[in-house]
Length: 112
Length: 112
Image (cartoon, rainbow over all chains, first blue to last red; front, side, top):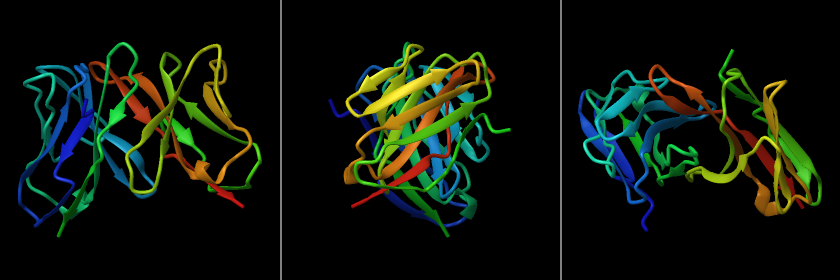
């Protein structure tokens, strides 16, 4: 099993550009989530999903969209990148039964 | 008040010492509790789940105190390799579904 995979590993965007961060898992987990991690702020939940077609907002959803069309994939879209979105983004997945989340390796995003 | 709070540290301890971290949570209805370990510039990795009766894994012991709404992590006989940031996570109800919320992490530095 590959576990949770994320692409790209690194990305530099200009202000106003849009892009999609990809996340996939092969563990048949129902629950998937996106976090951003900034120095001193810990992991902050952006959006999460409890199954295909079901998503909900986390703590910091503004400027991000998600969709969950399959169990495996949970892409995160930045609509119009801003410097405040410079961060490390982690995707995670778990079974709904236990919430033991497994994380992907992260995407380091810089917006200039 | 934050939903999940941790002392950011750093905790500086010598090899062989015993060190304990606490994590407080705000939602008394929370049912799932976890400790994660995060190394510098890496993804968080599940260290252990925290059960009502407490649990132990080698040198690591986790406890849950529901009355005071906190979980704890005890590390005995600290090793240099234990140096990392330790994150607690607690499940809470979001606007629609359960979500996992992380603390900001406690940094541990073990010195020779």
